[in-house]
Every structure is written in structure tokens, then in C-alpha cells.
Length: 403
Image (cartoon, rainbow, N blue to C red; front, side, top):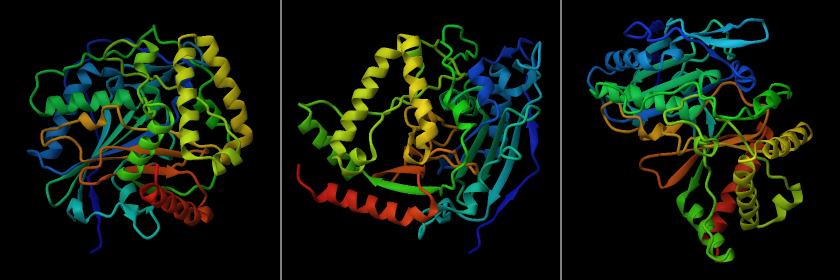
């Protein structure tokens, strides 16, 4: 059966009440570099809710009363070199859609190639032409209903208004209102002067890199192979626990509770190609863990962190294809969004515009799968078969190997 997605015309959802303030938010240098970049996320819900589209539209309008800047637009400040989020209340973009199949019948990826199919790109609204314009809505939402009653919420937003943790907080608020709460449980805070400005940002670097012809891959990492690596690390490191990805940097930055702006930072781990290719996975895990522990210390000293980040960014100009940017949507709160039928059974990240840097993003949860789902654009298309083959052999050896 040919799967098709039928979309209704785009409409603007405005705050349900007059905005509580007319104050604008001045974008810092980091955020000005972010304002042309969009972040796309898809949340999959298998259980239906009452009048899915109308319920979410109503809750979205209610949530925008408190998250008023999300309904605004970016404008120039006192001079053309400054930008701000202007509290205009023009609204966010919303599209209702319907797919002619059940969720279990939807093939988001071509299983023979592990590459994204057209269906996935039909489940989200992208900024035209894939770059956020100054007059565009700051957030696009598409709700796609399936014949089984399940639905997918696809959200893309202008990075200048907030990072993934901030938007997940906003979606949780929309969900709470959709479930009948009188107000969101978390009081939102957008401006926070206590957060240090960490510049120049990685986004500024990425905008200056030439694009790479990378292929988008859907990768499954079995839980048994992950557990095996953790067990090996525990044995060979005197009982130390394996490292995790702290995707939400708010605690380290000292942000206020409810802050939904940007807190993006990254850290570099450097190693030669031969060390990575020929070394044991446990050595690589230890290398990453040691670097991350140093980051938490340097982060408290802003200037030390700046020097460390500048060094790594300069090297990226020369490495590019021999580097890997690792991010994660775990621990950001997307898995807590509930619009009345339960939490998402799967979270996906997919964008038409590839980063000019190899990347991978673990996406959890994934209900019913004893594995982790990783979306990656880490190799060129001609290298994909060899990469997937080596990854399969690696997981097989980890499962069947000995400590």
C-alpha cells in the first residue's frame, strides 16, 4: 500500500489571551548565530486522545500565554548588528495532517539501506528554504493522525528562542494543559542574566564550514552490547561507572528553575585516527569520561572553558570529516510530554539539512525494542555499507566476547 500524508493548510496559533508583557528579549552573540538554525524533533504517541488536533491546538494557544516570546518574531534592535525576540503575539505555525495507515505500518526508514524515506520528511514542517527567516514564526508544529488513533507531533523551531531542553519544557506545558491542568507545573523563565555567555559558539563555526555529502542513517544498538561495554569498563576501571551524556547543561550553568532559553555548550576529545581505529573501546570510553570530568571543573571557570573550546574549534577546520559530534535527546524531557494518552513511545530527530560535520544522536525511549536508536549522519554514502558492516561485527563480538 502506498502511504500518503494529507495536510491541511498552515494556520497561526496565537496566545489565547493578550500578552502579559510587551518586553523584548535581546539576543546575545551566541543566540544571534543560532537564529538561522532550526531543530526538528518528532514524538510518536501510540494511544489516541479526544479530538487530537483540536485539543492540541487549544492547549498550544493556552501555553503561549506564559511562553509569550515563542509567539513573537525576530527583529533588529537599536542598530542592524543587534537582534531581539519581539513580543508581537503573531503566533506559531500549526499544520494538521492525516496518514492513511496505522503507526505499526509506517516505515520511517528504508530497511534495506537504513536511510530515511520520504514519509519521515512529511511528518514535520520545515522552514523554507530550510533556514529560519527573520519574519518566520519561531516554532512550527505538525500533528499527524494515523488510522489506529495514534499520532505524531513534529516540531521544528528557531534555535534562537531556546534549545531542545527548553522546547521540551514547553511541550510538557502544552501536554499538561491538554490533560486539563489549569496552568503549567513549571513557571517559565526566558531571560536569565546569571548564565554566562559562551562564545564563539560551535554554531558560528559550523556556519563557516563547507557542507559534507553525508547520508542519514537509522542505527540500532542492542542493549546487550551496551551492557557488555559497561560491564567491561567496570571491571577494567576498578569499579567506576561508565560515562553518560548530560544533555541538559542547566545545572552546570546555574540557570534558574524554569529557564527555557539556550544553554548549549560542547567539549572536545582529541585522539589520532590510529588510536580510535586500533584501540579498545574501553580505552575510548575512559578518554571521553576523563575529558568530561575535566569539563565540569573548567566550566566553573568560564575563561578556562573558553580557552579549551577555542582550541578544539580551530582543529575542527582541519579535521571535519575525521570528527564526530555527539548529542542526545535523552534527559531533555521529551519523554515526559503527555497530551492525554500517555508518554511518547519513540522520539526521532530528522532534518533535511545535514550538518557540515559528522554527527550522531541517540534517541530514547523506543518502546518495545531492547535497543537504543541512533540517528546519524557520520559517513558519506559510499562509505555507509562498510561502516554498517563494521558496526554489526563490533556488536556481535561484544555480545559473544569474554570480559
